[in-house]
Length: 194
Image (tube, rainbow, N blue to C red; front, side, top):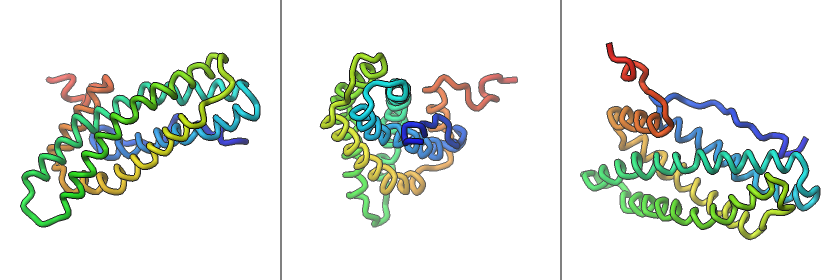
């Protein structure tokens, strides 16, 4: 069994009543898909576009095209602005300048991913259709490296800030927004008022 055999679309997740857990689960799934680019590239170099490569490329492409934009919206629309507002109104002496810089860096990285997506997604699509035998190593490497840096900032710095600064009401609003973004009526009681 190779790493390409370990594609797993299902991992434990939380409901929208725990939006930070949903964000963390999304990070885990996106990480798995992004990290699969390296063994996929190596597999293509060794075996060409076989069935395993076609299925893997399609799975990675589909996940990145569908899940990544919603995840970025979760952060850019719901999470980062709330944390930024809390920082502006914070009266204690925490190390918030670094946190503000991290928020700016994460937003900039979201924009920096776009040209990388424009390079990687067509390559995955070409492998998926059998039209390509290889992935561009520099494009894959740049994508994976930026993603690793990005995830470290989000998980090591922003994750604890979310837990510290977001209120229960913030979390309810964020959960509702995340559900709506995915076409889910949540909570169910809101969808069917008595």
